[in-house]
Length: 130
Image (cartoon, rainbow, N blue to C red; front, top):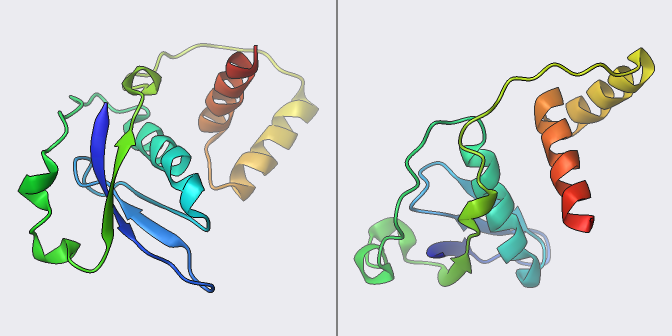
């Protein structure tokens, strides 16, 4: 589904910042313009993960473009794949080797993720490659 996304253009020293008005508080950034669609998708997935949310319909661009906080940037329409949003989590029990759990926890912490978030992301990426 196409959602309007507001981009705060970056420069040689700053990434392009992204605000997704239909998901309040959801934002991202990318150094390269062509990376923005993937970053928007990822940001919305993280925003919705573990939450029991009603996914909003896209607000028409014309409705939000004139707001004062959206005056110095540019707009793009991002095709957000709503089927990838995981609004509800399912609790499960898994057994893993202790050393692997330590490595997962260290990596997840370094990436500012939870263990569950890391495992969910790793599983989703493996399934996409399959």
